[in-house]
Amino acid sequence: MKTVLVTGGAGYIGSHTCVELLAAGHAVVVLDNLCNSSAEALHRVENISGRSLEFVEADVRDRRAVDALFKAHSIDSVVHFAGLKSVAESVAHPELYFDNNLGGTRALCEIMADHGIKDLVFSSTASVYGNPSNDPIPEEAPTQPAQPYGESKLAVEEYLHTLHAADTGWNVLSLRYFNPVGAHPSGLIGEDPNDIPNNLAPYITQVAIGKREKLSIFGNDWDTVDGTGVRDYIHVMDLAHGHVAALDKLADKPGELILNLGTGRPYSVLEVLAAFERAVGKPIPYEFRDRRDGDSSIYYADTRKATKLLNWTAELDIDDMAQDAWRWQQQNPDGYK
Image (cartoon, rainbow, N blue to C red; front, side, top):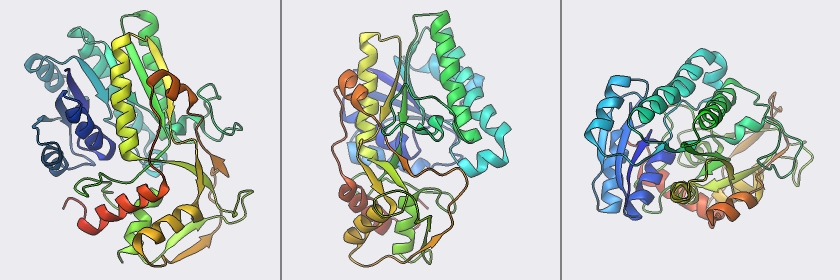
């Protein structure tokens, strides 16, 4: 059993990962400033797992608070989710994203080093690839992020690479994951957008429950199976399992690794919509709109490296994602509020 610090652990992916860490027998300490998450998620994590966790409400950039946390708890390793994630917001406020995502990671790692803790799993993103020509996308594909959010995540990866190059005592595993969908099967925790959803699945469920009029689909003339964009969607529970597998991998002292987490099975927007219509049991209204700048037709993961090195593979399909996301939406029409 390890004592694991989970930064951003009250967020969407963080909370589901906390459930799986507790199920695996680890002790969990969560650090979160709650800027885009809710402490209620952590209460529900404890309800699901039947185990308690420690929660410290603070910003990862608050060096005094983070240092006090390490002094109070015998942390063995860190899973680092804390960061901002809105693509649109990052375009409007790039300085905020670099300060939060890169600055927060630097502050965290410096305090980790002060306490002799050098095992880190970092929550990165497939956005670092930009609009790649590879299909599927391997980890070796060029990194050309198309917006400041992806640039800030890539800057963190580069910082962690430099950190490991200077001190090979660091074990750093960066996980580039694709499009998380779904919720815990209990319906107790799930994706809770602060405002208008940026992601496809919560927008669909909000239309289905009557909070929004219809779904906008950007482009129906792509060179794909049905003209709509194709993406790699991964169930958040598979993603949580992947983070636990990555944490276990740190015991092998792997040095520095970068791995994709996805299903390797792409779905078009209309295929995703059809899965949600099956889950909801009725048609979901939508309209086609013009393509957005920067979008690409097909974007999905080559997952062979994660399968080989982590002994992990995604197990849940698009119907599982839709059913669990819809259950969460029905049971929590206003999220955690």
